[in-house]
Image 1 (tube, rainbow, N blue to C red):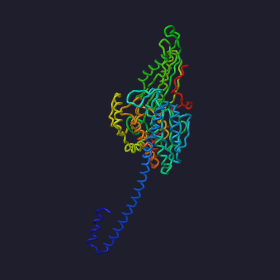
Image 2: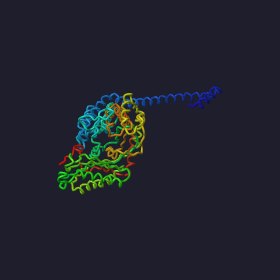
Image 3: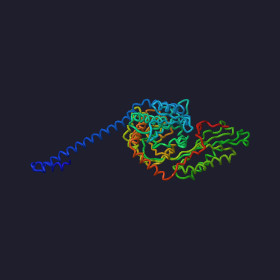
Image 4: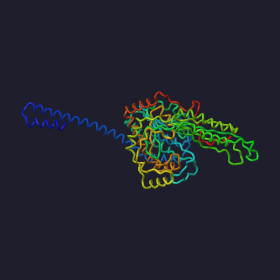
Length: 513
């Protein structure tokens, strides 16, 4: 009862106590009191119910926290192994075994990829996918120290933090599985063990094999130097290797008898430099020479290999650019009278954004972010900063920035997943702010407690967001509606030819003959 109405009742009771009006008013007051009691009881029930749901969701955080050291042991082990794409046999086995021991049904070697697997628990709808990666990068071996110190015995390093990526996703799934077993979550949870993200396009092959057909939502994350969220996209990418075969000869005594494979590679590189001037805005073309074609200047090199990426925010432009890139290689071979072998390794699509899911992630990432540097971590970060060309504010790790509408300059095979199922991801601060991914500084951080903090934040955010999706059918429905709207009638078009098998040996040294 409002204060105004209550004052009127008191007035009538005071000045007309013996009237019939007074009797009616007394009954009215009693009825209003009962209504208030009923309302309080209903409110209490609602609060108790909400409290119970909150306690169940909070249990996810506690589960991730209780598993922190076990998770870090896994992440650190994968960091030390630092296995190449499609060769992550120990890393994938460790993650798959961990999930299998927790009651997940594990299917190994999916999509004709020995190191790819799925792990499923629960039943029925919705089916929520959580993605994980675990491949390392060449030439970026590094100890967990803030100065350049490659680790002996392995040229690979986790300079993109995939040791953290796979582990955090597994940790989130283990926490969610506990609630599924308790009956607090209804539906299916599936972890996707995804190898060879760095140039191997494994998820594109997994999509082609129909592994995501029954999924309602897919969630992922990635290590970075800041905490980022939003419906951002990225660049589509095609990958190719060009191998040139020439004729060896004495470079001084019989140069006319030789045909230089290295000359062909150099001409190809020069042609692509000129090509850049005549490509659409935002195109990226870059390469490395994976085999330089010889060890002595007086020997005409008989073999050379180049590895190219071509990227653009629209996969349709990549489809147009790729044959133009091939012509550059053909020109190099033609001019040097060498033979060309083209090895197309596949491609990935740009991310299809989903703001509905991005904002659902944001509602969890922002309050869960508790990243802060201890005095020892601050010393480590400051030492790393001394090696960077541009320094960023270290307090950036305390913030979460919304980058909705932006287009990142990297690529990911998560893009292919996002074209067949509503998908969303985010970044957490695992590197020192200002650090570029694919650097030794990133490798050092992903093996340190800085990476550990970002990994834990990611696991909690994935688990909390999945919880919200399981308990809010309308949220999933809205995400699907946005997905259909953004597709606007377009169909998924893979950059993987139907007859192309996963390039399982793309990280192997080339055979020169």
